Structures are given as structure tokens and as C-alpha cells.
Length: 326
Image 1 (tube, rainbow, N blue to C red):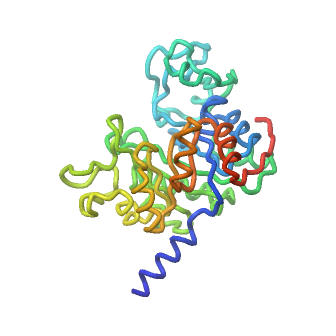
Image 2: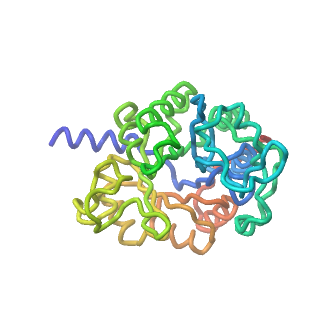
């Protein structure tokens, strides 16, 4: 019993501390090209408590910021300035110097993705940054409080597109520590194998269990035989079909569900288990208000500007703005 109490205390001590966590999704995807220095600069200039971002690893083992393991025509232009005609090379297949030949500063206007983010300001000539570049930008802004919620992008069904889970986690932890940012970082993933490894090599860094139970992604798989390949050998059905209980068993400090899966009952259950709840990706003001009233601890949004307005209306303290140019 003493060991269990100590473990719970360590978990709570590792959990990020905030009044309400305003997370800029991929920096501020609704305002600037996703996962780029202009997007992170926009978020810092507005004022967010956390920069949410995704990382990949190049062939020469440089940790870069980007959501998709393969270069996609909706946001990537080739060295001649033309949008890719189809899926391009995998990030893992390119050296960092080769990756820098591609422009990620604008959405392809012919793609429906452009209609989804019609107000995004292009930043032509922008390249996929290294994770260290994001840390440098934050230092340039003089922001000593903003946190980093870093997602390891890997897929158990596509092992060739990323390093092995343990190697991925080890490399990310080593870089975060070398940059002196471990105390300001949480690591999240849909593939919980990296989170298990982080718990072993850096238990002081909070882990965030991402979940989705949708037609387009279901990494939990309630009621299906055996454990999901995404949940590091844990089976939700061994925990009464409770996703919060599964997250607790995985050792995560934070449960981060797709917002449509975060019912009031589930949020309440998670809070009783001592979990913080940070939902993704919410861009509608009314939905933001409902989720805040439901008791979530934070929201990940493409539009931190809208979320700041909703927070102000609810008299929640706002993160400090630190204007900076990329």
C-alpha cells in the first residue's frame, strides 16, 4: 500500500500545473502554417500556456516538427515551388538537408483543407523546423513559462515510417533534457509504447495518453478481442471498458481525448481518478464554453485567439503574451 501511495504522489507531482491550459494546436494552425515557426510565433504573440506540436525523425536522426510521416501535397511544395502531385517521400527517408528543400508555408488552394483554414496567413519559404528551433524561438520571445506538449508520431501498423518506439522516446527525452526544457515538457502519443518508455527513462516528465474513438481513428477499441495495438499491451476491456481507467493504468498524468468523446460522465470519472483532462481539437466558441463548464483542465485549439476570448468571458486567467517574430 505504501508503494501505491508513493507512486500516486509522484504522478501528481509530475502533472503539469495550470489554472486552465490553453494549448495552441500545431502552434496556431488556424492562423499560420501548421507546425512552423510562424505558427509558434503567432501563438506566443497571442499568449498560450502550451505549444502543442508533433515530431518526426529524419534519416540522419534529426528531430523535426511535423504532423505527417509522409510529405503531403496539401501543404508541401517541391524545390521548384510546385505542390506535390501525390504523397511524397517519408520524412524518415530524407536527411535533414534534403527535407529543407521543401516549402511548407502555404496550403494548396486546390485542396479542401484550404477551405477548412481559409483565414490562415501564408508564410512562403517556410521550412519544417527542428525541435531545437522551437526552443530557440521561445527563448527569443523571453517566455519562461510556456510549456511544450510534444507528440511522438508513429503508427504500430507502419513501423518503417519512424524509429522504434524505445529509440524514438530515448532520443526525444535526451534532446529535451539537453535543451533544459524537461521541466516544461509533457510527451503525448496515440501509440502508448513511447509513453511507457518515457515513464521508465524520465518518470519526471508527464505523459499524456491521447485517445480517439471515432470512425476515422480508434486507438482504444472497446469490445474488440485483445488489446489495441496502440495501447502498449493494455486492454480497455480489462478495465471495465473505461477509457479513463485504462489511461490511469498506463501511468499517464493527463487524458487527452478527442473532444467528442469527452462526455460529462467520463470527465468526472477521470477527475475522480486524479487525471487531468485536456481535449483536442476544439475550434468552436460554444463547444469551448461547454467543455470548460464540464470541467476539463485544458483545450487544444487551432484558434487560440478564439479560446482566449472564451476564457476571458468566463473570467479565467489568460496566459501572458510574448510577441516575437519567427
